[in-house]
Length: 460
Ligand SMILES: NC(=O)c1ccc[n+]([C@@H]2O[C@H](COP(=O)([O-])OP(=O)(O)OC[C@H]3O[C@@H](n4cnc5c(N)ncnc54)[C@H](O)[C@@H]3O)[C@@H](O)[C@H]2O)c1
Image (tube, rainbow, N blue to C red; front, side, top):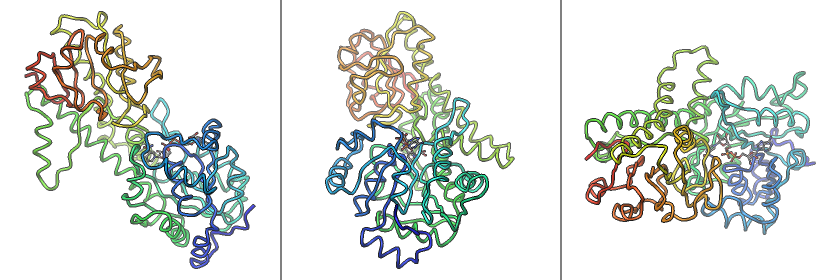
C-alpha cells in the first residue's frame, strides 16, 4: 500500500512527487476512453495501473496486445509504456487502488431501455472504494454524469451509510468529464481543453497540477463538479438538437426539391453558422445518452417542461423510420416489395471510420426491415468476419451488391466516399440506392439510371 496522503500535500510537494515519477495512478474502466487516458498518464512518466472487470481485456493488455485497433497513434504509446513497465492491467480494484495515489474513474454511464441513465458501474465501484480506498486518495471521475449526481449521490456512496469515510479528510474528489471523439482520441487529447471541477479549491488545484503534467491542452477550471458536468452535457445536447433541426429541415427540403448539402455548404459561409448534417439517426455512447441525462437532470430538479430536448430526441429517433419510407418509395418505383427484396446495409457503425455500433441507427433499421420480412445483408469493412444483431457481416462488397435489390448507406465510412453510380448500376441486382448520408452525386445517380433517394434531397 502506498503511503499516500495526496489530498493534504502542498502544491510544491505534489510537483516534486510528479517530477520524480512517484505519483501512482489507477484508472478504473480501461475501455474506449479509459485505456487511452491510462496510456497518456503512463507515457508522462507516472506508473499507471488499469483496472477492468473484463478479464479477457485485461489478459489481452498484459499479453502486450493493443485492443483499440481503430485508435491511431495509441498502438505506439501502448508498446512504449508496456515495454518501459509503466503500465499494466488487473481485474482487482483493491490491488489497483491500494498501490495508487490518484484513482481515475472512466466507467460506462449508459441508459436503460426506458432511457433512464444507468450509473450502476459507478455505484458499484463507489461501494467498493468505500471499503478499500487508502486514506488521502484523490478520486477523479471522467465518466459523463448529469449535474448533481456527484454531489447528491456518488460522494455519499464512497462515504458509506454511516459516513465512516469523510470527504475532504479521508479522500477528496473532482471531475474531468471527457469529450474525446472515438477514432481520433490521440488528436483530441492534444487539442481539446479539459474541464476540471472539484469539491473545493485545493482539490481543483491538485488536479490541475497533475493534468498539466500529462496533457498539453488548456485546462478549464470550473466552480464545482456539477458545473463541469453541465458544460459536458451542454456541448453534446447542443449537437443532438442541431442535428434534429437539420433532420427536420431535410425532410421538408425533400418535398420542396432543395438539396440540404447545397444549403449547408452555402450557410457555412456565414460566420456564425455551424453546420450539422442529416442522417438515419444519432447513435453512440454519448449524444443520445447525454440528452436523456439532461432530461433526467431537469426532472430531478422538478423542471418538467424540458420540451426542446425531448422533441429533438424524438425527431432523431424517427429518422430510421423515415429512411425506410424512402426505401419504400424506391421499391415502389422498381415495382418491388419489402418481402421479395434483399436489402444491403452499407456501414453499421454509428459514426464514420470507427468500429462501434453502440446505439447505431442500424439497429432500428434492421428491426423495421425484419418486421417487413426483407432479407438483410450488411457490409462494413470494420466488422468483417463478425455478426451484427444476428446477421453475418459480408466480407465482400461486390458479391453483396450482386445479391441486393436495394442498398441503404447507413454510415459515411471513408471507404464509401468514392462509390460511383456507374459501378453500383452494373453490380446491383436492382439499382435502388437510399443515401442517408448524401455521399453520392445525385446527378450522376440519375444519369446512370439508379433509383436514388436521399435524406434531404428531392427526387431529380
Ligand atoms: N466513447 C465515447 O465516445 C466517449 C467520449 C467521451 C466520454 N465518454 C464517457 O466516458 C465514459 C466511459 O465510456 P467508454 O466509451 O470508454 O466506455 P467503454 O464501455 O468503452 O469502457 C468502459 C470500461 O469499463 C469497464 N467496466 C464496467 N464496469 C466496471 C466495473 N464495475 N469495474 C471495473 N471496470 C468496469 C468495462 O469492462 C469497459 O472496459 C462514459 O461515461 C462515457 O459517457 C465516452
